[in-house]
Amino acid sequence: MRASRLVTLVLLLQARGPWTADELAERLEVSVRTVHRDVEALRASGVPIRGERGPAGGYRLPGGYRTRLTGLTPDEAEALFLAAPADALGLGGFLADAQLKLLAALPPQLRDRADRAAQLFHVDHRSWFGPDEQPPALGAIAGALWHGRRLRLVHRGRERVVDPLGLVLKGPSWYLIGATERGERTFRVGRVERAVELEQEARRPPQFDLVAHWDAWSRAFEDGLPYIAARVRVAPHKLGELRRVVDSRRRDLLPRHADGDEWLELEVWFERIEHAEGGLLGLGAHVEVLAPPELRTRIEAHVATLARRYGVEHPSSS
Image (cartoon, rainbow, N blue to C red):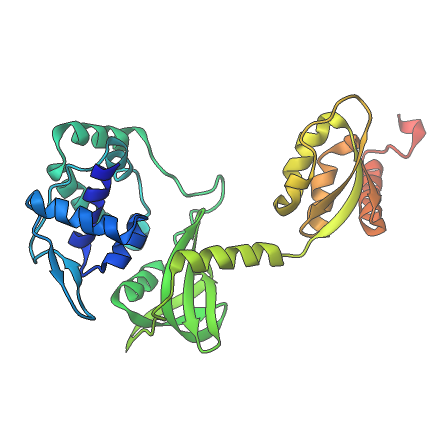
């Protein structure tokens, strides 16, 4: 455990500097006293860590110092060679070059593990049967974000200037978090019709945390979606299918199993009444809608239309 922490400490200092003891302690989840002990241990083993006092001080490594990545675990080496969405951002060539350099730095046993992981695993972010969303504006947005420049976007027919703060890949779709004159907004990149990188430097809030912002925004988005409640009777053996069609935010409120043959009366939730109609019709005669009246009327109308189409209402034709 300590060996892994020491390697992480060296890599943090190698990636940037300086780091204060408090920052390292928070990042490594240890005490400040442990950080001081780890630094002394690394110095004793030949790692030239420098300590500087003052407001801009902290621990740093001298420029040009590099350590070979012999501290990687086999699992970490494998993970570094799994597919990443670098091609979509125009970074595929850079990723390949970086992986090649990393392979050269790894010891033989880890090199074999990493190479095998790349042959055995592939991550495909596309959804089945849907279009492969590679928005034409993604490259320009990623470039402006990387260069720290402002963007002029045309989003759903409206032009606006945005300070790009981060890109998020959610399933097959990309989202841009940007600061506008009305505050931070989230844009689906596939709906951006045009993006132009501007010369002005983007303004980035000093405390902005992309992961924390996305987690909070996505939770608020899910919680803010509308839903309707429906009262239904369902055959016990169809409970699993019912769970698959209801609103995922409240799915855990449904029982997972049912004993016996008695039909269950439950309250279930859907985002919209159209979703409820389609999902419940898929269960056929194994579910009955009790409420609300509007949903029951829609189901009845659909069933009546099917009956007329197949001639069920004419006894003489059967």
